[in-house]
Length: 105
Image (cartoon, rainbow, N blue to C red; front, side, top):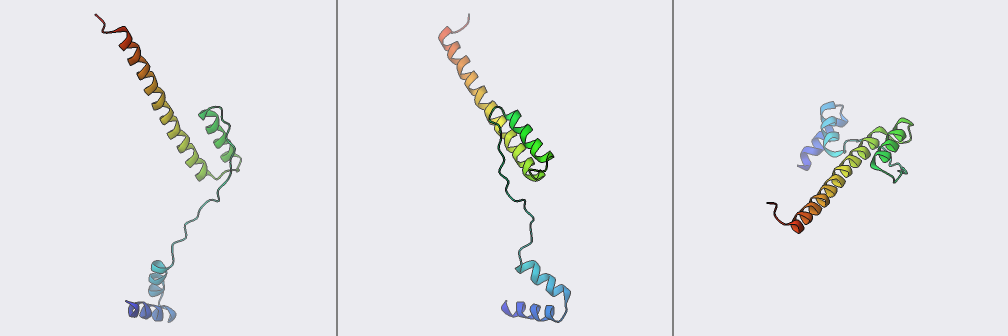
């Protein structure tokens, strides 16, 4: 295998673009642009207020759109989890109330 790599390197140095491309594709990691992390203060009142703060930060250029999208997705997932927790509590309360009342005739 090292002999193959050496041969490709020689060909690339001689101007063979295919050999150079092959070497670069295999040995140099692809550049993946990333946004720099941004600190963002979210109001703690409601998920809606937090979502609005994210949208405002993206609109003002304070936060990159990709990071805003990730935060909005995280807030949406949090909303689903909160909704599930609340439904679970409501069902448990209804079941407890029905258990106290006994079977209905």
